[in-house]
Amino acid sequence: MPRPAEIELVNVTRRFGNTVATRDLSFAVAPGEIVALVGRTGAGKSTAMNLIMGTIGPDTGTVRVAGYDPHRDFAKLRGKLAVSFQTDRLLPWRTAAENIALGLQILRADKNLIHARVREWLARVKMVGAEDKYAHELSGGMRQRVSLARALAVDPQILLLDESFSQLDHVTSKSLRADVSELIRTLGKTCLFITHRIDDALEMADRILVLAAPARVILEVKPSEADRRDGARLQAMHDAIAAALGDEQPTTH
Ligand SMILES: Nc1ncnc2c1ncn2[C@@H]1O[C@H](COP(=O)(O)OP(=O)(O)OP(=O)(O)O)[C@@H](O)[C@H]1O
Ligand SMILES: [Mg+2]
Image 1 (cartoon, protein in one colour):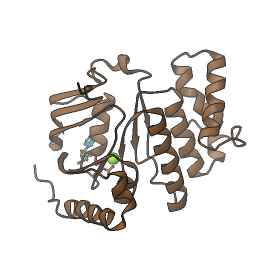
Image 2: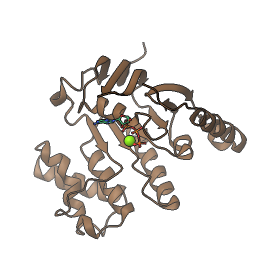
Image 3: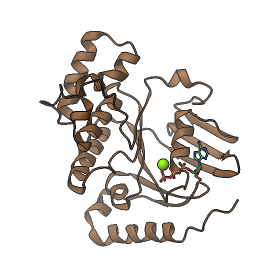
């Protein structure tokens, strides 16, 4: 029997005043799947993420995350769901290590466990040696590594990433993406990530959902490992996504 979806949106409509941010948005993410949301600015990607995090609720439709309504059962998802954002939101008065510890401290984890986890994650995101630097002393790439480590250190079932690699130069971003996708696959996490870069999506995701404003899925692409090794197939997928993004009509309300 197929396992139930870890994340599921069914006919979700959400307005902000006169703006329709999502209209009848439906998609699901299976346990262990890595799914990318791609769309132009204002397509409603972050709104979809906020609905999944439960920081906002839908006007109509349903959102389920790990079997819960994330808006109503916000507390039930503590520790199950972790998020890393475009702007890393590190605490400037904390060191890299102390920032990684933050989520575990909020969950009131045991001190020894926190210490061990922080060591483990400093190594995984290749930050050993920089653990005592304050957030403002870190480069953009280091800050994003710390932010990702902080999200993953709580051992969440589900990871949400909103443009977590976009501040970085191409080389740094590529190596961090490779590290993160390997970690996510090895640890069997479910991951939904937002990116405006088609190449990033093709490289990391099992499935790519192209959204158009007001957020709804206009194209779904499933790059296999074989596709990823075949330049021509990858290019064809890239072109299909670019065409879908280009054909997007301006929003009318
Ligand atoms: N809190 C809010 N109040 C008012 N309008 C909002 C709010 N959040 C989002 N919107 C509107 O909803 C629409 C979708 O915004 P959203 O932030 O989800 O887009 P996005 O796809 O994440 O864009 P970007 O790629 O620029 O991050 C936009 O028209 C935006 O102005
Ligand atoms: Mg956004």
